[in-house]
Amino acid sequence: MFASGESPAGVVEKKGLAQVSDTGTIEKLCDEVIADNPQSVADFKAGKAAALNFLKGQVMKASKGKANPALAGESLERKLRTR
Image 1 (cartoon, rainbow, N blue to C red):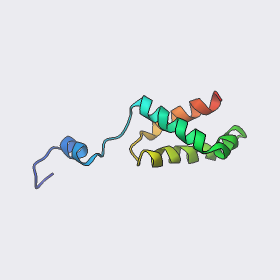
Image 2: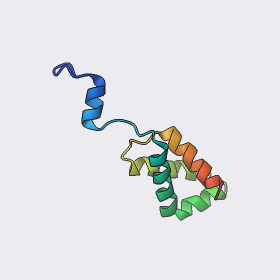
Image 3: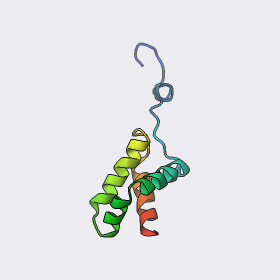
Image 4: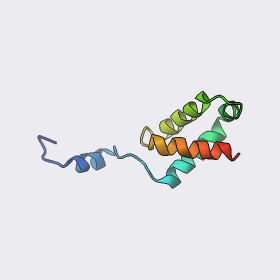
């Protein structure tokens, strides 16, 4: 930025570093992760809180680290509690 004079927002956009906060996109990723990890879903339902963190990590992995972690956790927890 110093050398090019480009704005921080411009650099973030140009390099694709923006965080994904679109709930539709995050919900879709959560659905995929839940479908792909039935054992972790069962562990969560059995009371193992660490399973939620594992699933959240899988959402982050699927989004290449771009998903908003707070929204991903909220969405996962809501989906798991209603299943």
